[in-house]
Length: 497
Image (cartoon, rainbow, N blue to C red; front, side, top):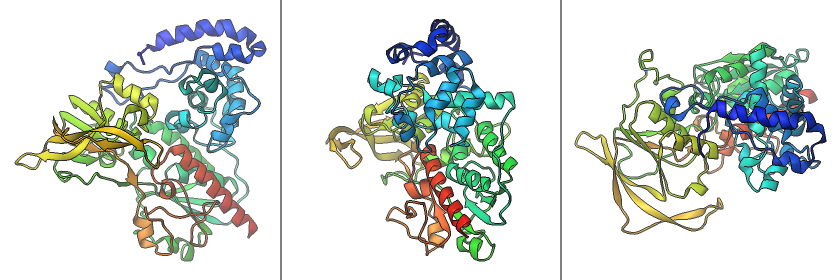
């Protein structure tokens, strides 16, 4: 993917919009599909690696309307079924094509209160965009209608106009609901339950709200101001927040119901337990979990060396182990923190990488090296116990494993050494163990995930759960989908009483 400047993209959009806008209502499906897809304008790579400003700048009005005209408004509407929160996607896109941005955001907010977040970080290419009629016709999911970018456009438009509508709240019911964890699942439950008039309190272990969106996703991908906007909406609805409150330590889970009078509890504590490879040398100075590295940089502001007291390791040569979005985030953050050379080391090929295509492309533009079909065998240290290198093995792909991806098989005798001073492990996270460990009544599976039924009900009376604590490390939008189901169940329970 070749970088193109925002000015170049805008000129092209204006040219095509002049051609297609006057006849948009008469365009046939084949004509719409033939309209070029609109790339996302972004900061130039040589500039953005020196700041933490958002990389993707966002569509202009002309780009958004042209992209929206590409939607064929097909009858089957497979994109809706593929959306975890079932947004009426063709309807909100049609409003954009017509220039009616207020109606567009109103449609989205019928199903989602976090459009500015989802439009930035959700993997649309494997969800709503994958079955898109346009992407199917062009046999390229990247050429499908850019649903997430359009969602971001109208949510940003709403904030820019200052005309943010606060969802209506029904009369107070006198019933209280506790939300444990202020991540995407918890925020969605809070919104949907509060709409029904119930008193809602969110208990958050950190001093800031947002969960993994705040501590795990860098500001160059999801600015904290965007998270704050969504939290402000909940605050305006009357949702209460208690930070620095660790349920399981500050207060036991069952005490919220038995002693504090909450009618129901939702647990959305996420997947914050970092996994390691179990190789020799992982205890050396200079080895970090991506979780810790990103939390220091994001939540604890370590990138702001002049104003923050949070220490962060000074690195020159960094290897990031893994191929997901977290690996891309860690590698790109290391580059911004001054590392001279940053490499992604992944034991499969780029085709099998779970990271978003856009994130991989941005990382390459920023000079991140990609070493595929390789993995760490052991991490090497110097006499002071600091990382000095990593012994790696080369791999080849064998038969598919349970995930459907071809299994990496080590090649005997292929060992080689990489010179490094820092290793960041980004191979996944396990579910937060605190609440299951302190609440023996909760049923968990062998991975420590809380077991729930179809309505997100746990084995405990009046306790529901959703998001990464149930799914394992997943996506923001999947956590939101679980939150919507849990809120529906909680509202039905309280209405029946």
